[in-house]
Image 1 (spheres, helix red, strand yellow):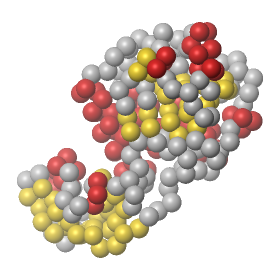
Image 2 (image 1 turned 180 degrees about the horizontal axis):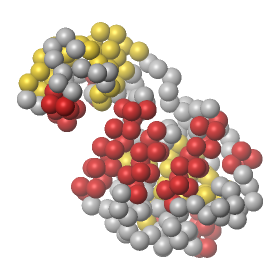
Image 3 (image 1 turned 45 degrees about the vertical axis):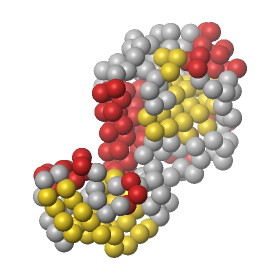
Image 4 (image 1 turned 60 degrees about the vertical axis):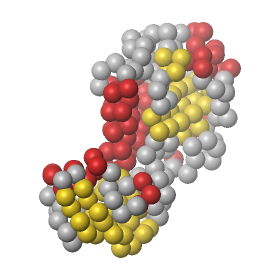
Length: 229
């Protein structure tokens, strides 16, 4: 079996059914094979001790706590997007270190709701992206809320065309940060005012007009990868 990371909450010795099916049916795991398991707190080298239809049991050989997390809470508030665009946002946000993803329903959002099946799919995307990127923590993906329900934040950055401030000028990398990104049509003037009241500072992402999913990637990259975190 080729090297693989599997998500196993609690490192209980039994993989969740979806993870087990992938290792057994796709990767052809056999007793004695070794792979990596992880949860929100640690990862470990594991050895397969039993396989069956939709079943894989393992024993932990060596635990470790790699330093791959950002170190502060990074919450992304992206406007709800239609189609597969939200999946791309969740994947990129997970790779870049977001700890929670809370979609917002804004005035110009084309999509106004999200079904339970799509929400579960986005959560699976987050798990897969965490596995690929070496993260321990899988970001929480929450059901969308109206923008007016967004709470006040300690430190917030709002991607806003025409803003004068740059991320590096206003960001305190040692404090939790919330990031807000609007839909394709942008946030309305009233929504921008509301976000500022809730603790968000408008920042520029350059002179070009970015698609919503690109803006999420750019803002997160400046906050995490740009700070070497």
